[in-house]
Image (cartoon, rainbow, N blue to C red):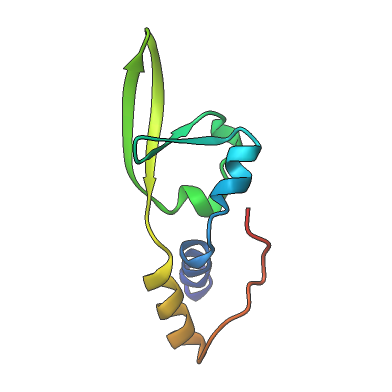
Length: 93
């Protein structure tokens, strides 16, 4: 159980590199939301940080729009539990 909680905390505190995801064609920022263009391209840590989902019909096509949580609270909790500032073990994407 402890390992699962740690994994969730790591996923919640790992920053999302929105610029890279836009460059790869995974997301596109529009009207304060991120349009999901490639569902399989979204990293697992980013999926865990989704806080709102909206499906919008545009010109007969349904698009999925996402809003994400910030990582500040999770990073602060992780630092508190691990006894200080942490280094990123994983590369962000």
